[in-house]
Image (cartoon, rainbow, N blue to C red; front, top):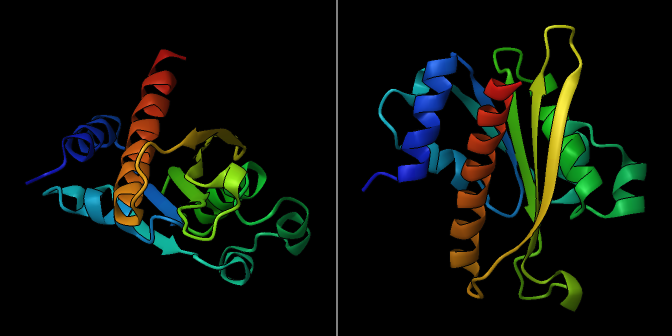
Length: 167
């Protein structure tokens, strides 16, 4: 069964002729896999980097070591940088989303089930517009948390694109 949110996002990408790329940590590629199930998405999905560990965020995406040390790999600042960095590395894409967070079981109590989502879009002048959010997941089981977080990313992308149409 095809994901309704993925289908809606596909329609928005197609209507706007926008290509997307992902940097995923806690969802481990589930966001891009969900979107990839939609027929025709290959025209709009550029790819996904699964950067599960801090050193991979640093080595593959170029997230600054100091940023990781100062804020932790599961933070708003790092997620924003992940979105910008994956967009910089995918010249065919105009839109990016990144997610990282704590899904447990060894998460700090105050961050258990918290995810950070960032969406970035490159403007005509080369600058990035980046929006980010911190969300608390309702689910408690790990795979359910990954599904919920993936759904949140697809939803954020839809809201971002809808807002871009309004501006």
